[in-house]
Length: 283
Image (cartoon, rainbow, N blue to C red; front, side):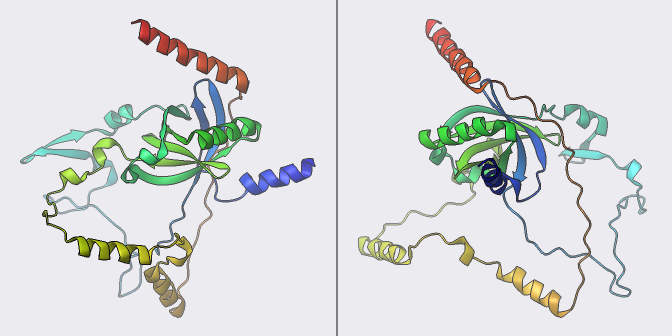
């Protein structure tokens, strides 16, 4: 029985893409150690630039527009244009000091109705793989989100960059969708153009709806193919091009934080929320 359970968990969590980041989901006092795995695999065809005379690999170099000579890396700095011919030089040390400090936790700030979030906020999908010691807490969160129809808005720091995201149940696992910040999303009101208002003919509108309904079917992503990429790969096969690969080094494994008693953490978190609401009412 134990072997069957282990095989089931291995099938559920042990295969797939290599994890790229490790930390914990936290909401209230509940702590769930996880590993972050990509939810998509890009299949773009990548080319190198070569010299047509000898097929030698080309290198990118920086040249000074005033001295017309190559600039070594240690003489390159970052600048921000502030208008006209003026710019502000920002030192690397100054930027490093501003990087957000992360403690390898994905903090769920609050829960929302998932269907009410505009899809334009979504960026990149990931999966959250639980530590073997956190299976019960992980499954509890999956089921709680399913039955309430909620998703968790979270924030975390990964590789010196701050992210916000949405944690939602996907069948028996948790997925995390990183999100754009509010001032990054362009709304229709911000567009420099807008469709002119026209008076619709009811018969034409009904005909358009009939056409839409006649073409309606279930979403079948397997039937949607990247014809250009497949044609490029066939071309490469015909030219017998060779692909050179290197072994990717995985992220350094770190011990997962200890999982505290689940029921106790849930009860204490709920008590804190009730005290907070009671304090606000009294004020």
